[in-house]
Length: 424
Image (cartoon, rainbow, N blue to C red; front, side, top):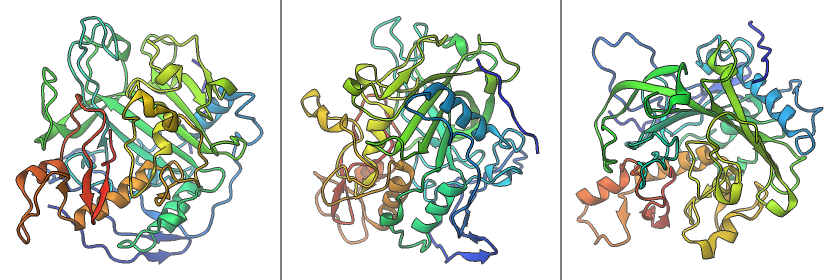
């Protein structure tokens, strides 16, 4: 691992317009819908939402590094930038003393929405192996495990998020084209223990209000939550960079390795690779072949992390970010996969008639969640419900947990439009 240089320095839908405070707009989006237990003395997540009203200007240390020629150094430099001040703030990114970071709104909605302790949302479940010794996380994996994550935007990204959501009840997806220099980072956690994934030893642990199940089976539907331990496994980074000519974005993924050298978990994160395009013939990625943990790559060896779906890739998944969401995030079949592994600029919709959200699934998902909150959600096969009545099966679809047995969720009707729910 490299040396790091860290500078120490109930459902709520009523939203009001932002209030200006100097150079920021303070919004009032909910942080979480969880009910905080009586007597809780631990952290309570607060959405960082005082978005800048002017495009922030700051020196970006990776600007002098070409991501297509020096991808490893580029990613390491951006990773150090992400850590700077956030470690000292215990990842309360709105209180970072070096620079504030910002969260996307409307990720609190539904059964998989933000939990109250750390603001984590549920990611894809890692399935139990169909064959012994063939687990996605490790040969010793026997059960399915929940994965939860929290993402955040640097000041240029936060500025653009604020523009999209300037009218809280009427977000403008057309404003979601992010400025160069935007960085989006995400910390991903798992419930997997050392006994099944040994390279997670000595990783960072948080408490989070997550779903209750043993992992012997991977249930779907709305599940009860309670505070439990989650463990850092992966860090994802996306950078808006015009030097990535065919997509406009550079993605990097890091995976935790408890056997690596380093005094802290952050120093034991190992770079899996860097990706700026989906075209394997053009060599639009760099993969770290010296990584000390099991390699978790995506389709045909494209960059992916251990939590991610091996049928996809970092760029393929995020290229589907649009509203309305007319296609699933994962290709339905091998015959249709070419469209999912093409290159798209962030200004190009994945489907004609949709508005692209520039590779930001959090923007697209937030808008979808807002619309779902206003719409009786029905499956394609459901009969028209009686007035003001939503069938129980449709409630399950609306608030479903992420079952590991289905890569592609069933489409649902949102505001008279058939959409695929985000999150797989």
